[in-house]
Image (cartoon, rainbow, N blue to C red; front, side, top):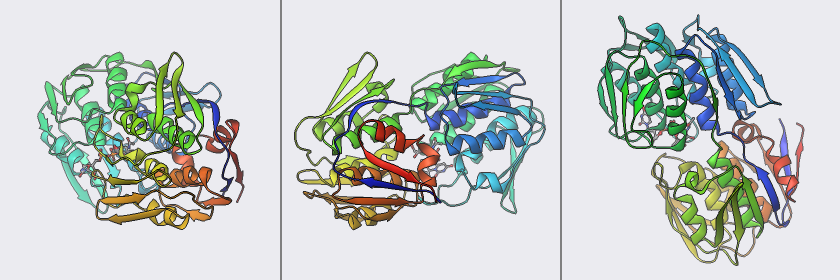
Length: 419
Ligand code: UD1
């Protein structure tokens, strides 16, 4: 298995091209199950999770072509096979996103239950309850979700008891082909959902309430193909903003907008990072020292849970203390023991962690159990004295395209060591 070697202490300066968003690409790819015409996605990132979704759709019978040079994915239906097997779903929980589209268009689906994962239990009850409200009959048997519907799904008023990105996406896609009107209340408002709404509308769907927590979908008989450009990855951009800041550097995040950052902009500014919107992207520049800032993760436009680990690494070397509270996922502090091994002073208790900034971190061999935890160790290593070896690089490849090349191009001393 590959490892990453990193020598800390270099200042990052320059421009980084931000790729298409992983969390937008995955639901956008699933829209291809809703039509028999081709869906073409441009600005597609070459990530392990995107490859997993491509494999899943291919085994549903779609023609899938991902050209990593032109960054284009072509998906051409219709699906001929309605089972999402355990082997693929266990690799990536977002596989559950095929459930709503398969059910809406073919009246049947069999999808493996995703099971637990490193950052908590992560149930899919909201997805299933919503589909049941729309007339689906669902039973769980031998680790699989078996779902079918007589005729078409029926429009329904679905009130989410808790904001869920995935459940909003699944039900939104299902509702586009349902009979009648569906209202999604307390829907997630992440930019990736707005991107999905835009793509579905370009396929002929009737959706109102874009960007709000109340989406109204008027079902249509069929959808047609489209070409859609995937929006920039705000988590990749935020990760590089933290990476630049911890080294005292200045980066231009190409293609990014401040609006996409939500509350992360304010937190980074309070920490001492200048964030400026420029014509071709967002400029992030560390002004003087870093200051401790309290953050609490929340659904968009609040501070993103997917940025929590990276921000904690930044706070590890800030002046003063910072309290970081995780409200979205249980058990999302697995980076804490590894950051502590690098010299960070962090005390985690329940859903909160107190970070007391230290003057210096030191390099160490480290290992992480999830995507964002891994990248927080890279950020810490950039500022650490000495060498860090990050093991289990496959976590990084799920969500960051060529991270070592992008960081090396702006001045980091970093390399991938083939396993
Ligand atoms: C998506 C993102 C992930 C991000 C997360 C929160 C993708 C592919 N992944 O994950 O990177 O960290 O949003 O912004 O877009 N929940 C339930 N029942 C359900 C569904 C969710 O209880 O049926 C809970 C979850 O356990 C969690 C919370 O709701 O505590 C939010 O999860 P959700 O927004 O659904 O996350 P994902 O869509 O899985």
